Length: 590
Image 1 (cartoon, rainbow, N blue to C red):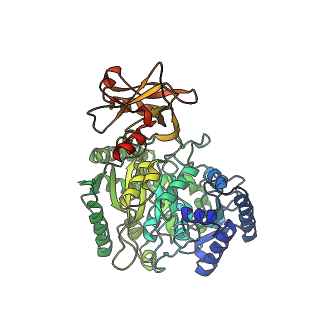
Image 2 (cartoon, one colour):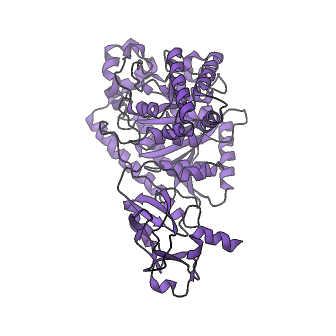
Image 3 (cartoon, rainbow, N blue to C red):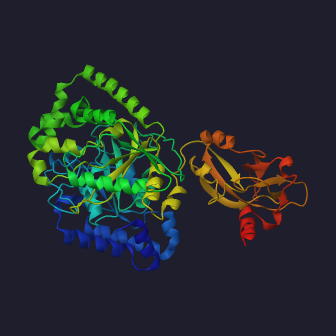
């Protein structure tokens, strides 16, 4: 159930939003998984919303999808995220309240045309990675109900895995947006902290919390992030993220030197099989790093003073109504009483040292690749050993928000017993687009090129540059733009005052553009926009006789663009009659 497929069916007439919603409601009824949902949008109201979108689609066609990128896409929301008029319980009925305002991430998705189906179950107060700590029931795994679904975003992940929603929102503090993805065979995107607003999200550890996305594939997850992301001035933890660009020239990937699977031979074999496939990909280089600082930071989250931040969120409620809380959750949050302010500062000092050690070990790598989880326990085993097995599931996840990193969990080679086994690629803050594009490329998805050309909206000063030759989309040096987070904003022509020349002896072949006083022509160009902070390094890579100057476009605007020194075209061939570099290359190839 992907966004691409749903929209293709809408455009072909094979389906409508109303038909899609009927399919979703039928799946919910047939699955008989009441533990997935805490509350649902009224069926009649949902059908009415779908009919309104039917009419819009019938009237506008493809234009409606261009204006509303998630039109008619069913989704679910973890029940620690506010939705107007629906209770927010955080899986604790006594804690429930009805918000007057939806969280901004929900508002953005609804404004993009998505259809909310309901709110999903979770480990109470988002405290757990197992999906069993809820009075609404343990959420059973989508593949084998005897196994845990993972948490805390358990219901959201299973709803997507069972086709009850095309995507779902979760949250991620210690791995809650990745562990359930790995255990249910879907994609879980944990963005850079602050990229998606956390206003209207009941906090777990407020300084670490992220809103995460579950989807059937990477392209869908990226579409949702694009719709949901944006700086929120009313959220003190929202940030204007400086994004990295994308690269398609191979990736440098680190793997922990010390891998731990807690005796789960099937999980170990599945990870090794996935890693072997990735090692065979051309252009990728692999190395190992000491996992000790990552492991030690992961332990701090539940075995250090950060449990006090969970107490700051709900401690007063639990102290006042101790019987209302799940006993395991209450026990974890109650550990806060063992720490004081000195412990909190000592924890910060320890974390800073571990983060520096981790950053040093990853220098020279683009990503860290880890198993999403080291094992996959049964529900019965977790109920018998709730704290120990929960800690095992966080072995490869807990450190990520501590170290201000982004992560993308995807399915890997399945275990020999047929259960899912996921892997997670982890990058630095701002690497969200790089991660999405890299994973799509590594998995061999056709959407990799489309993802590379589709970054998030800019949240920083930019500059527009007109390119005329080897930097055009699909040409050999276009990666120099993509690597710096550039996006194509227009395909156009220069004003009719230029001549284009094929420069001799250049590798790769390049043209030179020169402004002339007479006998000029309009030459095909593309206008790309890139962050101003990356402009200088882009210019520094341009070899003589080329340079960057000011260039007049057909509409009279002047932008920065490629020009050529007069000496460079003295022995060059005038190819202006072709109207552009691509046309010249096509004719030459023929």
